Amino acid sequence: MNKKWFVIINPVSGGKRAPKLWNKMLPHLENAGISFQVAFTEYIDHAGILVKKAVADGLQHFIIIGGDGTANDVVNGIFNSTGQPENFVLAMIPAGTGNDWVRTIGAYKNIAAIPEKLQTGKTFLQDVGLVSFQKNNETGNRYFINIAGLGFEGQVAKNLYEKEGWLKGTKLQYQLAILQSLFVYKHTRLTLTIDGVTQSQTGLSIAAGICKYNGGGLKQLPDAIIDDGLLDMTVIGSMTKLQMVLNLPKLQNGSHVKLKSVNTFRGKEININSEPPIYLDADGEFLGTTPVTISLIPKAIQVLQF
Image 1 (cartoon, rainbow, N blue to C red):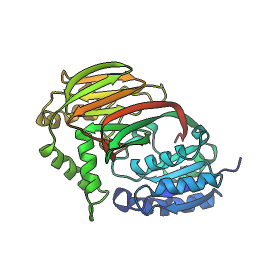
Image 2: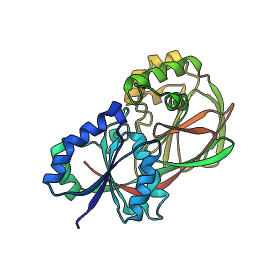
Image 3: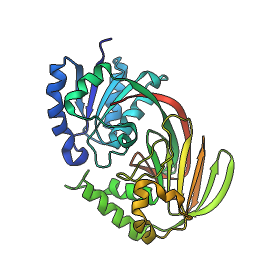
């Protein structure tokens, strides 16, 4: 079957890395006779709008050149356009700051090999998360494909969301947001309900989702399986922020889940409340605050396997 791909490029991803990557990739697609049309995003959530129009035009195959946030926007565009998202295929070409989703699904090996993968490559179905949250005294909903973060994670995302300037989309901006959050964020009393079972604890940071990595390579959910129909959750509890920094190597390799101050959970639906409310992000994009409900749609969308 002759597939036409819709290429979505975020020109500011990864410190404007995406357009350079596209310029290298373009001649390979043309030489291979790949059918495609291309669009550049111009503002936040623009990718979702572009996707909705593409879906209305009958397109089902999408190449994403950008970061995790761009991929999140594309997924939301698909899910908000059709009742059969499992018929759609995503090919992720990472060009962002964190690039955490591809650490689980796998990234392309070289640009010259991309056309062959687009033509004959296999796909797999992965789970997709759905999170509800509070923003401006209203309830919002957002689909996600990697990890939702709360507490310290959400504070970092909020700091990034509010910043503009020449550092936008760079690793340095991300590192500065982490440093800023370390000074201002405080432990919070949490109420967690996993598949109807409720408990309370003090928490510093929460990661819940489908894949293994967030925060630019932190293996927050080391046992997560992308298509098992379950959400994994890691709660960093009474650990101080200094201890969190000192344990960074454990966060990077996933061994932090063995620490006494870290608890892990697994379930199909997770409810999180807190006093005071804490910030939420999904796939690195700031969304709002608690109360939060996270659920799962099993094997919901196709992903190209590189």
